[in-house]
Image (cartoon, rainbow, N blue to C red):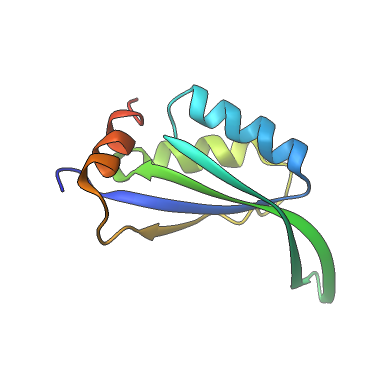
Length: 107
């Protein structure tokens, strides 16, 4: 695999915001694609209280060399004070697909 690929994970307050931000990140080549899961239930501690809420979850596919730029851009667009931005390395996969991801994350 010539270039390392990452899954970037993030949650959003609703599907409309997730779509808008995902479209911008893909259009501007920060990510090759985004898979939007429209409804997840989240339970988390925030400012000393347990919160419950419905969110939209997105899997982004990014190349490792775009990780920092992707994170900076997503953080600038995200409505949360502290957005979930987690990167998971892709250990292996269909080489043609991974190459496609790398080719579509060009800065």
